[in-house]
Length: 216
Image (cartoon, rainbow, N blue to C red):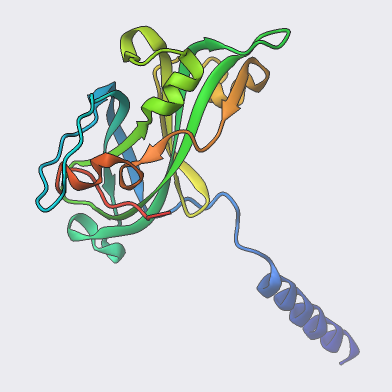
């Protein structure tokens, strides 16, 4: 009887430990993301027609637009092809043709985070991010910046439920890690310089071309 009591006590303790153990960290989220393409190009400040406002004369400037096309797949328990994913994070990295003045110099990288909302699983999706002309002028010391001459590369990263579920980059990965993690000492990261559409004059254009974002 004593040995049976000890066995039962051992089973109860083991069960209690398992109940308190955290969920495995490598369990992947139910959503799957495929990045289909990324376009980086200039967009001039939109000229919007409004009423009851005295218009001012100005010259539109160049913004840098990052247009990320992607799609998602959801399990049937989350709606499958007819479902939507409530929210995920997209990190954007833009490598500039510009170096810091420190020794040794580092390549400057503008970064930003978009909180994407209500992402449909039954259609191609787009996320739009922007770099403001004022930011670009402060770095390059010129009014008009072009993607072909002033942008060296880019990278995007999707995070769902705290885990990276997709990445895409114009710069090849050598060690299996994206370049923004592989060689951090070579880059000078400049956070919060890449904006979501709602932080820009483009908030009122393109309709529902792109997925909604959380307003910061």
